[in-house]
Every structure is written in C-alpha cells, then in structure tokens.
Length: 130
Image 1: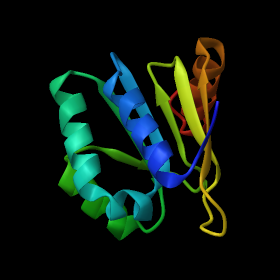
Image 2 (image 1 turned 180 degrees about the horizontal axis):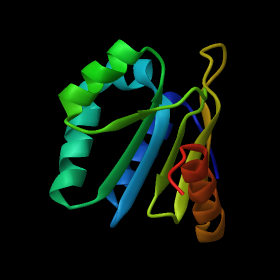
Image 3 (image 1 turned 180 degrees about the vertical axis):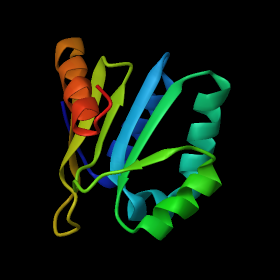
Image 4 (image 1 turned 120 degrees about the horizontal axis):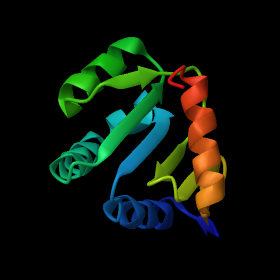
C-alpha cells in the first residue's frame, strides 16, 4: 500500500512498530532521528521493555550518531546509504519513496514475509553481519 503525507506515514509506522513481537530494523538519517528524539526514545524504551531486538542503522554525522546512541542507550551502526526504511518481525517493511521535502512524503508498506525476510538478510549482509 502507498501511504502519502508525513502524518499519515508516522501514524501508520507507529502502529506497525508497536505491533512488533520480535525485532525492529530501522534505517534512516541521524538528522531524522535527532529531530524526533523524544519519540524515538519512547519507542525504543517500549521495545526494550518488551524484549524486542532493535537494529538502528543511521547515516550522517558521526558526532550526532554518538549523541543519539548515548540518548537512546542503544548501539547504532553507521551506514553511508541515504535510505529510510523500517522492517518489523521480518514480515512487514515500510520504505520511503520520496523524502526530499519538495513533494509530499510517500512510503510503501508491504506485509510480505518473503520480501521482508529477503530484504532484512540483504541488509544484514551489507552491514557485514552475515
């Protein structure tokens, strides 16, 4: 499903992440996380309390990433890819198509275990984890 508009995407994403049972993979920019640090702190704290594995991968300034790592008390991996995607339980994936500010944000949400698992595996290999 295509989701259009920043608030629609945020609301839908919150629902998807809150429904996580095992794992959440987040890839975005450090600047994006920093601009929503209270929301990310609340979300990661809730996930940790539920014993859900969190993989946070950020692009951007290393000092900002370190500051976010300290605030969220979470190990962050740095990546040099300008992408914004979320994978939940290797079953659902949401990725942004447009996020440049020149037009409405547009994200694609897929509830496809096959696609989400394949994408998560490729992502881990890109990070050198498998």
